[in-house]
Image (cartoon, rainbow, N blue to C red):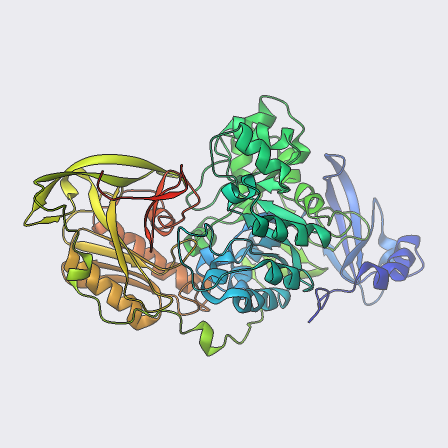
Length: 600
């Protein structure tokens, strides 16, 4: 299976592209009388035609009627804008709860024609074999899905245990695969800063292959640690949350990737570096990072990010560069995609308004793939093997005793470390709360918005349960919510106010092979089965989104008022984002990158 299995390469196509452009041959497709949006010059040019041959742009000119032959397809643009297909520079397919095929089917109608994906979620569960499965299904799609080889599994060695580990040898091997575009986000930023040999070996293997190293610097410290990280080789970073973060990245030669996902709203606070400070926008890129199926079905994908950037005051043509040519240039693909110019893959959108970007017609590799929100192409499925569908191993049936939190002997009150959720952001707050001891145990306190959190080991069947406390969800009554999506180790996270409900929820997830389950007063309110690696479903996005919608309703019925609370839930074990998280080894103080005790 080759990267160009759906499109001929430029060397294979050059003679024909030249012949069509010179008027010696006719095109496969001609789009007539549109407004050419040129992202190289940042201008719109009225009354242009586009000729396509071999799935690539051959020529763009005011009149290409001479390229129309008896077998040429003709599309009338009717004065609409002809915009390059949108690119998502950094994203995780698994966050959509979908396989690559179903993710592609969901986003193609929104105008996304190129994706740069980091499958480090499945890497933690199934290792290199899982990455290869994602890579192979990606190559089968009618749009461009490039894969970044995951860099950090575990994300923080010594602070968590994963199902598999990624080694420098794995990275070097993957760099030879046809669809690998670079190294996934280097989340172990303390390792890079400390000069860890394994992290530097992975970066070296990527650079030796001439490919791009993805970054992830989740610290507010822009001093010596950040300078050391930038010196270590990451070429981009998406963890910025404020203008100073964006400026620091681009000043140090990195691309600032500003994300709008289902729960991460980091564009508005950073894009002022361009809109107000006037920095060169070509080093700024838009991305999603994490979008769940409900967002994809109901709100959009990169078109949603683009519109948001425009609403934040960004010039539409600048915002368009940030999700087309800037992305292509960053990954060394400027001659292959990201613009409507000769030789590039013929990926484009027809839209009647550049500001609101209604996606009316989507063309990928010279073929119509969607019109007016309807998918018009096939997205082939990979044959997922049994080992990818049998990944939740609890070892035994859990009981409410597993979720008991004993207090220090003789204590009537304790000072507990509590994970504080921040709405619409990935970081958490390290809170300290006084809690009362009842019959030797410390219990959740819904009246003060303090729920219990448990991380259940699910890869090796050890039966280990790590307990703690979390605040911010607003849960009330007897409830529990559990998920086998638990970035990045992907054990099982259960949050609840009642130990019996938490045990029932965990056992249910073991029974169905992974997914999300919400319980209240002894009954399951909602369930989203995710049988592939406990992360994804190969059902259509609309089906998964409907189940996810019921999950959101169930969470609200349990008292939750957070925006996209599921995304916050799924990140509570991500031990590389400050300030405090939970792992199978205990509570993690991410500011210090060390394990810490639940009680102070």
